[in-house]
Image 1 (tube, rainbow, N blue to C red):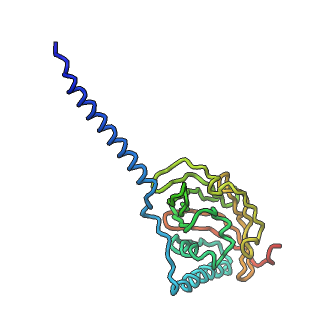
Image 2 (cartoon, one colour):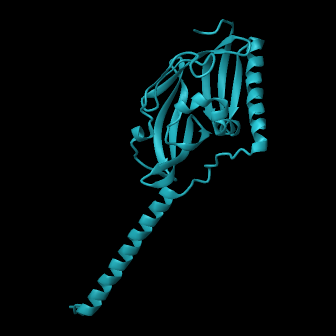
Image 3 (cartoon, one colour):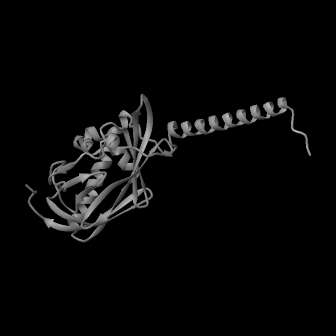
Length: 238
């Protein structure tokens, strides 16, 4: 029978095991803290220089003009929105469409969007427990039952997916915008981002006074494709 190890050896072994366990726990904690606090590499809201701001406005005007010309042609068409342009418009939203701020969580600064397959990610800086972190929200975006539907799916802090009370970001705030409230001819928008925000398929385009109907919408990496059916000239909705 083997003799038992001396007490000093057993004590030394336990100290080694305890130290290794502590180092492992600290490593896990450090990795978790790093994942929560780090800024994801894909989060890059544009900083629009003063001499570039007019170019962004011009880009938006050109995008509107393309939509106008497609409506005037009177045939179904596909309209594309690329993420780079959209993020530049978002960066200047207070100068271009101030009311659009009502559709973003009020405590989310420097919003930034990413388009992926069937999903849109909205990210921004959020103050959590006295520390500024990058919080990102994944939404499913698609065309369902004759309307565009947007619904919150998941949240991340830094690069780590976390359970988070969506109401703390104001995502359960009910929205009920009548036709034309956000901009001339805007479609009705109703619901909330937790149970589903629905955007009516029909709208009215102020440039030329033409109505249209969205028949489908596809989100893919880097862009959104919108299938549109022109409905001809109509008076603005009341």
